[in-house]
Image 1 (tube, rainbow, N blue to C red):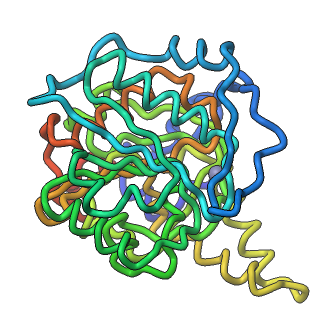
Image 2: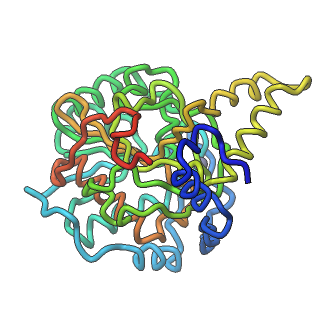
Image 3: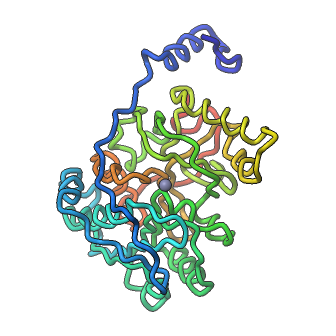
Amino acid sequence: MKIPVFLSRSPVRALLVFAAISPLAAQTPAPLPKAVVEKPIPGKLKNGERPWQELPEAEVEKIRAALPDKAQATPAKPRKLLVFYRTDGFPHASIPHWNKCIELLGQKTGAYTVTLTQNYDDLLPDKLKEYDALFFNNTCRMKTPEPVKAAVQDFVKSGKGWVGNHGAGDSWHDWPEGKEMLGCKFVCHPFGAIQIKVDDPESPLTAVFGGKSFPHRDEIYAFTDPYSREKLRVLLSIDYPNSPEVAKSEETLRKRAAAPEAKDRDREFLAAVRADKDYALAWIRPWEKGRVFYCALGHSAEVTFDPAMVKFYLAGIQYAIGDLKAADGAVATGPDRPGAD
Ligand SMILES: [Zn+2]
């Protein structure tokens, strides 16, 4: 097996790298249990909302089975979380699963109570003031009204929290300040089976993973600017040397963009191929007096059946709410950053 020159600076390191990328050492993501997803996905009503049906009880049971018994931090006071599950773009079939998961998670652990809404009016200052944090559930390509943009910014900057899962990373393409708060711009989702590296093993948010790299299978997003480790505290990222499918997908993107029949979209998707191989998947950041937690994992409903992932989300929510303290200063790339190898 050919070892890249930059990784083979010393024989010991080369051996370690070889062991890490050998097929024997790599873990294969186990197939996930299949969720019953709602098909067809309900169309938009005139007001842009979607009449999602209640989840079948069998699905709710799978979510219940994944919930932790208690919260990581004791709430300083009763907390209120507003879950916003409107999507103006792609409607993820997992939206009802996430609504139920976040609601039951708060109910069971006592970390917070939930209000669910698809209505932009509920994000205006008069309504927002009663909440401690917002959870944007798979909100893709949002056409956010200007007063809502200002209200969300004021809310978070004043000391409140913002949490986003998966599609929320694709929320804002025409709102620079929103993208900056979120910490990235979504390009496309070129990857599937990956190994995930814990970048900040000392963080209480990643405690559930025990500092170990682990396999995962989902639709995996790739991001570009304003993503930067100069601004964000990255918690999880793709363990690139142990994720051989990622290099294959990069090659596919390059070939498609270079082909004579390439379309604009193929050339745009080339931005997903990162020269630095730094494919971050979850991070936190302060946003003036407030806090932001984003995790790109969660396309599939199956993520809500995964006890480790659900616990990770709860820690992220508790960080954003302000109950779970964590070092959240940016740690730039380099050999000294947490999790660097
Ligand atoms: Zn997705």
